[in-house]
Length: 433
Image 1 (spheres, one colour):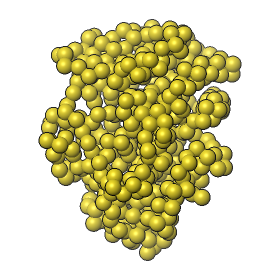
Image 2 (spheres, rainbow, N blue to C red):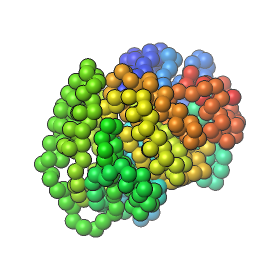
Image 3 (spheres, rainbow, N blue to C red):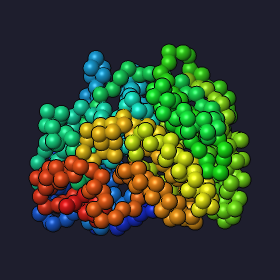
Image 4 (cartoon, rainbow, N blue to C red):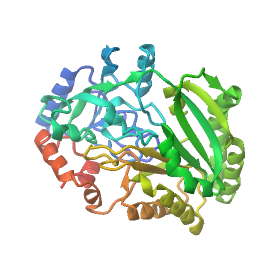
């Protein structure tokens, strides 16, 4: 057991003081750790990059980090499959795959998370044609609450459907992922008036391989991003401007603007319109898929994100704009809309429906609670499901009503973890019967 460093998540919204901190280097060490925790009546939670806005990993007992469980097990170039230990970060995996002329078919906005983390929390990308990252999984190895090792694949239907597990079934130690040949994406970004977005959003989402919308509140246009696979040569128009944006403007200028807006919120609409002029312009670039889909790490901010039926996205966008105006909120960060294919994972926010994820972001605490209240009111009316790794509030039994297979999931959980070794306060409130 290592000395506990204390835990605080990336956004600095949650912290805890675990009694013990562990970084196993092998599956055998994981097994022994779990058995020791069981015999000592200690709870165990897993942490990767800590890039969740919820309290999903917080514990005062034992915290386990898999950063040292990050080896490559096998790469099958012909089958386009890779097997790695579960602590490998996506950024490392992207580089590894590139060396072998392979790539993941879909990614989220960042790749700082661990492979186990993105699978367990239903992390998603920006395409209605592809599912959450867990749908690229072919098999995985799980150490359950008794220290027993399970090799899981689609032939084990119930357990396979529980692969989005929030870390409460056990510790994932190894994963096999289906990849594809390395590919380039052509990104086309351009501003569109809001009335046109309302009309064409669903058509654009369907017509493009990857698609997202960024809107700064208090601005009359949104920025559309389309991404499609291409064999054209790599292009980075305004390359110096993009470099300056990623390495100076995003890190320092935007952070400064956010800081001023926190002190004088009445200036936020002006700043948002300024950023719209600076940032919302037509641009084209072609580059390696992960480099296009991934973004530089943004300044620290609050983040909530809900999944709704994809067909309701235009309505939700209009209602959210109206809500911000009616409440006279001063929101200093983007609202983001992305689409994701439905899946069969029991705890996936995309379970049984093609979905739109709508994210509301804001830097600072002033106005945040009221933004959350208005945002969630709209999402609940549209049968929304919150992203497990983002900020959300909930009423008693609310989560249970959103996931029809939760009872089945809990039956699986109780068999794999009969002593509730992997249960913390977050799991107790959201998942347990």
